[in-house]
Length: 458
Image 1 (cartoon, rainbow, N blue to C red):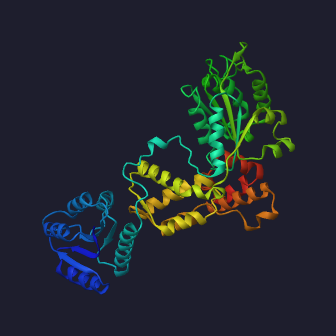
Image 2: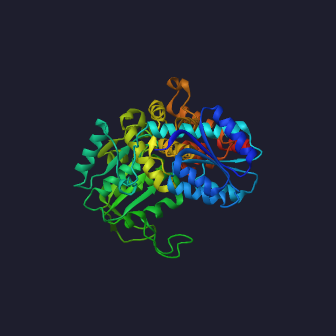
């Protein structure tokens, strides 16, 4: 257990050792000093300080070597490197080997004070908050696992269980970022045909002219450029699952052809004559109100009936806050696995902030916020400040006067804000909104924001 008030200074310049010792003692800390790497390592073994201030150039060992030994011995020790050199390589090397911070000489008292205060705050937070994750919590096993203790989520699990015995068509409804694609995936993985392909059709990226051949395939020479015959998504799925993501974006012409296919499960390739069959399960997902689109003539009513054989409504995150601790645990395990971070604890205040937020971007926003916060915490504990900052740099919330606006008007304002925020950069705005670039382009075109915004950003 390292000592919360103990700090070690390793520097070969006597004047720096003395001034640091005075400064840190005034803060009420117990200070040990060493003028060589070997002496420093010995003091570290003897006194187990929680913070080490380490010069990069020492007479015997290099500071990086000392850093490597300390990090290997106890990764939780916060090592603040100090150096007179401003080269990029050493900075990168030091951070790569687990330094907490890197400060240049002549030392700026405020900068050093911040680093020491933060290091001690992290150590105290690690101390106070028991681990929520253990080293062996790997993300692999949970790749296709839906978490949820709320009644709505339990009902979804039951429904997936019942559907595992048949190939009924399913419509999954829910806001952007609620994890509709994961539900489709789990439905496939729980079925008797899980060894068959799972094929996704992202309806937001389909171009009218190519959609038909994308879905049904085409015969050789069916159109310019069709040099050879090609199997479409329905054929590729075989006896598996075809998942239509954001089906509300499907062009009307293709809606008619999809309806015809769903009625008799037969189709021909574009330009072909041979009738083919496909018995794959069809799952469609949407974040739009399809009944409303049908009333406006943008979605075929008869196709909606065909898709709505079974309807699963995925609740937004704000309606299942009870699940936040489990989701946080699962996402952090995944982030650690992906980014080689080692967060195992979370500050109480950080969890409270996560509970209070309304999560307009749902699970996707939660995962983005956690990823940013994990990287900014630079520690084994997720800090409240890092979570607060990550939420603040998340996309702007929907306008306060939302009650008096139509959904379309709200969406339009939300997109305007995100575009203004990203200075007209479509990639950045799409990331902030948690949608794909093609989806955002379609919306911009619909609201005619495209020209004015991109000119503004130009």
